[in-house]
Image 1 (cartoon, rainbow, N blue to C red):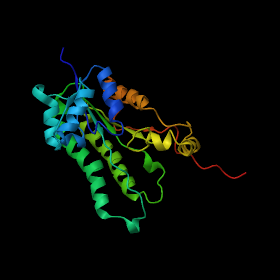
Image 2 (image 1 turned 135 degrees about the vertical axis):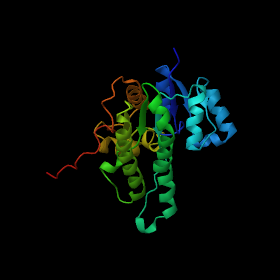
Image 3 (image 1 turned 60 degrees about the vertical axis):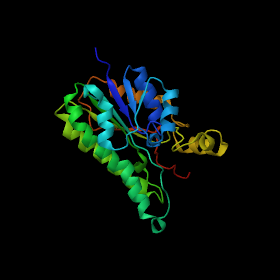
Length: 250
């Protein structure tokens, strides 16, 4: 029996590490992309630390999908783990190029990736798509227009992709985290080691803590291996109960 294949994008960031670990544990042959893999040194370092993983140098969406499919021309699972630094600040002071860069990373790139992957996903029996987005738009913050716009657009794309692939039996679902421990968004030095950061998380997140990466991995594994296809177009909140309505004064 041919080993099922999986592709994880931005493998070093956000939900990339737990996704790779969970898919390897589930028996997938995992191929990874990361923006840092433009560097041969970065590729070799990652490959040395993850000997079971195939590391891509490719950065163009079409080339990534072609390389991930390999000789078999099949792709069982695509984990589009979309990460980019969240640019915050008043709109009057915003750099419009920051918006373009954010949209390119969080909307244009995953769109191009799905465009390239759709023909392969349609012909690969049992294929699945898991997109890592964000539920930050559930409670917009002052100065968050740029990342909020990009994340809202990506969550909308998930639903659009799911409609296009539903008749082919290819579910497209998203995990929308907030307060997931990652060095990309909630670094250990600030939100785990620092008492002020821990207190902030305890006050804001009903679960009282950051999500553990392995918890994200469990959910990625479920969506990647679930045999059913009827659940599609779901954007699953993964935020420990956040957001909640502010408490009323006594």
